[in-house]
Image 1: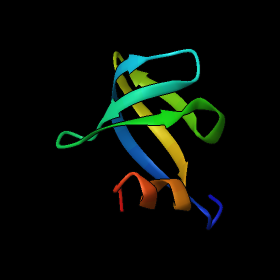
Image 2: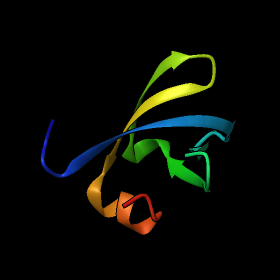
Image 3: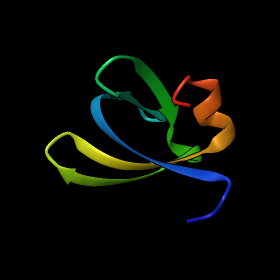
Image 4: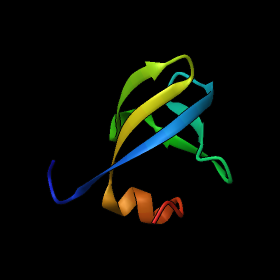
Length: 61
C-alpha cells in the first residue's frame, strides 16, 4: 500500500452518482468516488482506500 493512502473498513449507508455515504460506526461522511478505491466485502461492508489528506479532512485520522 502506498504511504499516501490509508485502508479503512466502513459501512456504506447511501450513494449518489459522485460519492458514497459511509459510516465507521460513530461518524457518517461522504467520500467522493473519484478519490477512493472501495472493495465490497459483504453486504454493505467495504474495504476502502482513502488518501491521507482526505482521511484527515473527514476526521478518520
